Amino acid sequence: MSFLKSFPPPGSAEGLRQQQPETEAVLNGKGLGTGTLYIAESRLSWLDGSGLGFSLEYPTISLHAVSRDLNAYPREHLYVMVNAKFGEESKDSVGEEEDSDDDVEPIAEFRFVPSDKSALEAMFTAMCECQALHPDPEDEDSDDYDGEEYDVEANEQGQGDIPTFYTYEEGLSHLTAEGQATLERLEGMLSQSVSSQYNMAGVRTEDSIRDYEDGMEVDTTPTVAGQFEDADVDH
Image 1: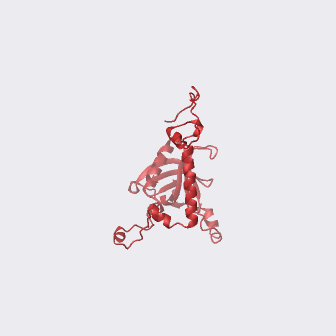
Image 2: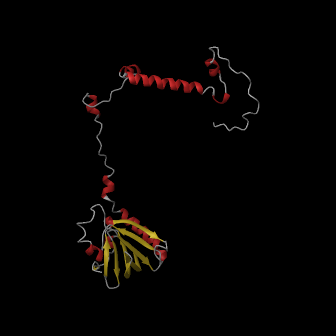
Image 3: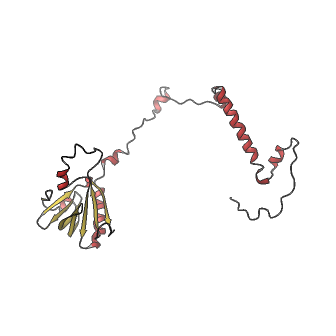
């Protein structure tokens, strides 16, 4: 493919972490051949036997993982998703860029299939370590707070916008007639709810007896023994 180029493999000067020979490279389902995968701190590179290959910059890599799903691909491999296009797709997309949606990013899928699948864990670990050396700038910017800061000095001098608080009586004076009627209705509902709590399920308390001291008859029959023996009590 046209994007394959000849370049020297990365060495110790570029922080080489893992060198995996006899690794097949597959781009979007098309095999590129068998070569050597170089996982370095600076970039991810693959070269075939003739010295042709490609390099991937870590900021363009959006996902990497070990794939063991044989339904997705017949062999276990290191899966790498890149926000870019390569080969024939990059040529075909030139004329379509004007009509394409600006929000849709190009995606390419690489599969690196080592002849020794036991090396996948080491390959994945090396990828994680190198990827961590190239954090996404957008993630760092997301930690910045864009909201307005509270100026303590300005508020102490009376120049800031300080919220107004009212006491209960002051708050009532600011209510409209409709608001006061609503408040009275809510208070009445609340008092009825509190009163009903003392008489639920036939259980009487001293408070409930005091509520009926206005002359209403209260049933003082003792509760039948064993009525609530099986009930669970939450403590």
